[in-house]
Length: 115
Image (cartoon, rainbow, N blue to C red; front, side, top):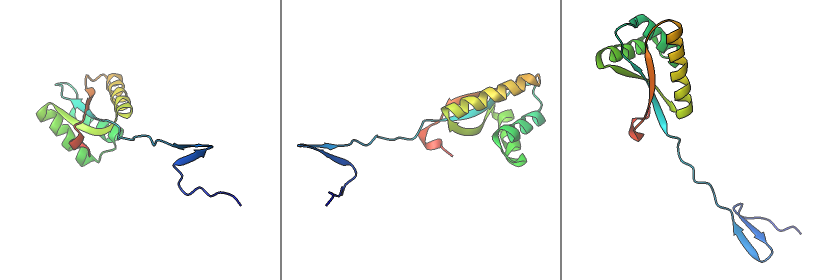
């Protein structure tokens, strides 16, 4: 007759009972990808860039572009750090390739700003 294991998080090793510790998991820190305003990049280029790289609708991309234009910066998306850094790098390269000075950066999010 085999001995059944009732609880998966303990093991019996001869005279010693060993309890496996479970890893403590926490959500990864999130970062917002931000486009900064400049006086040279055409608004239509910014809208198309937001649609292409952040998968926003034309209406949403236009709202973000107007926020960038009026407030100096606008949030295009919230991602984990590695994804945010990659998005910012790709956007900056794309802007440079098209000879526009548009700048994209990442900023840490407050925990209550996640969307």
